[in-house]
Image 1: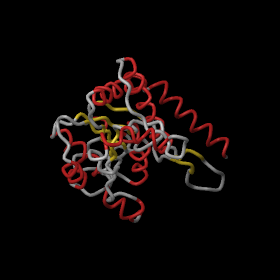
Image 2: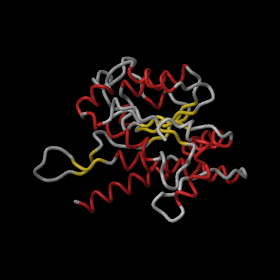
Image 3: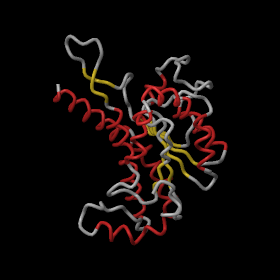
Image 4: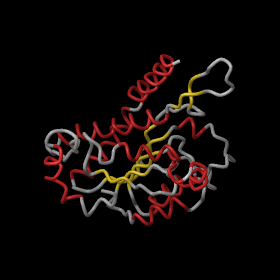
Length: 248
């Protein structure tokens, strides 16, 4: 089963790499413009395990220091899994998060959600759009399009994330997320969305770095604090971010 799971994951990531190069490049261009201007890139992953995606590229060894995650506690599993699901399905909640963050026309927001439909996510996208924020969506197009319009997780508008953002990166996560069938079990096991989200986001980061270097810009990158010289290397740039990144 572990071999089958590994195969499923690597095939999915291979498809993202092969099929989403254009959208990843477009997203990277947006991030490169922002970072070249010494502006932050905000990342929000409303909904259950999608919160992990925002954390994946925030304060991350080898990652961009300009990334600022919106770590709102409403949909964190640590506050209760059923509560998290209820909050992500609450119309208006995502709008409150974006309003509180104070994002505006000079900002970029990356919205990450495995399925691309929940109410908090869609409200966040709509609120950002109204404020003139440039938006990038990382989600599964097929999962959104094949989910019934009346599904209880959906926003009242029935909108999909990929239809609202300026750049959409498709993670290709299949319906139901889990991919492994086992004899004797009625449900599939082995979810893949966390791998897909992390790979798509890190691909955008790497492409952004490539673009910045091509422009002659050397962006600050986090070094692991557990590596030799890590604290010293990071300290050189901290004052530029300490008072701008809320969760730093």
